[in-house]
Length: 388
Image (cartoon, rainbow, N blue to C red; front, side):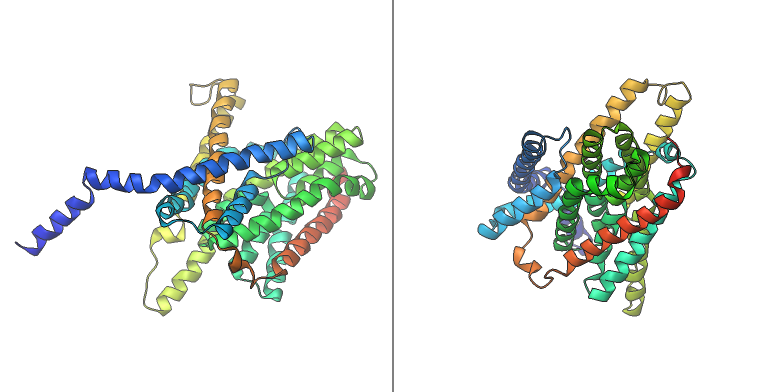
């Protein structure tokens, strides 16, 4: 028998129906465990945030709960080997699908809602947070990618930005988990404290308070929670509207920042590879799931443009139906991300955090302070020109 024949038979064996079924069955146990943990995390997030704390929309991230519960379980009970294929599938495949679907959240028209004077406020806060947080990370000598994840989470979209950026810059699962923890802790603190700080430093100006909350609080749910507290306590519903629009504009910049970070780290890897005689592929310069993420953002923006023009999205869906459609996709993106991060928690060794100590939290605190101060200064200079 020739070598070519052997290779063909081996290849046929790898792709046979029996092998495919065996691989699928091997994935199921771990994937089911990740799905169950995700379900518990989503329920607990809603219960704690809405039932216990009384928010209309919970400020407690189910992603954070999934990671935390996974870490506790994995530390207390070593994961059986039978679960590993499914957990790996959740961390690698489910995560990337969730990131792709996450692109449906973003539409370029959110930028226009903020106006010509509001946009520079957001841009200055994003750029300042990225640069200064990275510098602080270098000063404290934390792992480069961990500092980048904290910077991205602080400057743009909290947990969602971290989860989307992690695979793009090839961050370790432990780094993603730690960055999510840092951002969530400071975001929850901001949800409770920042409404009162905003009222104090901005002299009760509801619009400017909304701008400040929208640029200085990390995660979208936390921004809405903080702004809702402000609106209720100070009878200023305009603050909620301003904060929500400002945060949506920040979210849109994921379309720019995440591909840039992916390209930057891929170029670094390529430079290192050239020095060692290796070559990077085209897909390593811009991962395919990032292209899918961008494609969904384009689909959403085009559909919205058709609605704004008085027609139907892609000639098929009127405005309510189009909103229902992308809301379903958005919901499933959220579910998939929680499942994936449950897998991250269940495959992460809590002991690996010991060497990092409190430095990541110092970076997180420094980032939160920097963004808050810069946002206040810029709003003091430009805030009076913003109208909504």
